[in-house]
Image (cartoon, rainbow, N blue to C red; front, side):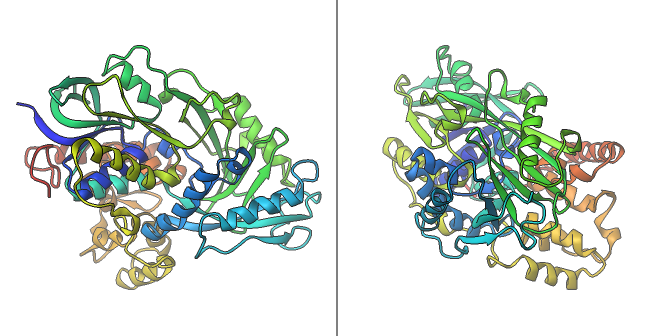
Length: 516
């Protein structure tokens, strides 16, 4: 007999993991399946901002901007280790949007969403001082406003961890290959990486597969004509650090688009993004030569020192699954989310379209409101003030925690501790527990990554390859050589093999088992 759950979630991106966490915390029996690694699609390919979306005001997306601005400080409070405030400098370009329009938009941005802890907008003199030094002398005046940064892939993983801690089963590298109505529910068939299949009964299915949402409908559910999303590719370029201060820049482009320049991983600057309509498999998305040139040329319009595509140390691209509202331009398509019950299905099936990382928690609450209507209510909404794993610390608690850990582990370099705190927060204590020397952390693979941390990521965070660790759980891939990566890959393979041995996989449960 098939095992069963109340809610089966398809997709291990931020929306899927956020829904699973919320549902599990209310007492539903939840199973989530992701065909690849968590956050391996859109959710690790963002500009990594928790923000209202200043430019969406021009498209009159006031509800979306207000909701996102309200969520901005809530998310920061729930995960201050992976989310922190940034200040953005917007230079006034005399040939584009007038200064009064920028100031009006920023006034609305400051007051639309109940800002409390973030500082307000101010006018800045770019002709004098460090903020104008990297810029061409044409830019004499600008505005500085607040938003937040997020380690997007870690946000996804922490939601998955909290979902599992509350009883959900998280099936990574399990593809949904069958979706068949059965009575008043569903029979969901999943296939693992080795080809083994398993069928799980579910009272309700939520299709949060992101760019693959239509593919799930066409494939597993047999809906050949499904077409609900507009796929838009966004690409980013990472270059060696362009300037020394900690501010970000938001630049206006002549085509109406905007470009961000953001300090990244201490030694780099992140530039992006583009908006291009995309066709094909979202897994194949990659930056094109003309996209890289577009980003670098746009940055060079503002910076004194030209930015060349050849400067790039890393590029990444992802496909955003925007709800197809018929907008004529990719940048005009709505970023708002749409939750739709599939009226063709006899049993409860919901499809999630669009959305942005900042509003994932509210999307999950909206999704659960609809779930309650069809399978009954359990617990009340609870995620608004609930810390994510490692986030039980003050908003400005990173430095204090790093100081504490440096006293406990004086033999571990301060920069390594600081990195760990930014990624794991208070969980860093548990990761390093009982270690008395560097030798207790095991083999070092490069850039301060030791076996102890790798084993933690394999055991607790579903990491299964070196790529999972270097580019999603951390960003140490920016500092790893090919030989170091190969050595890490071998170690991870052996660690996964050991974890997968009978009786060796702690903390994993099957759908239908009693919730933890």
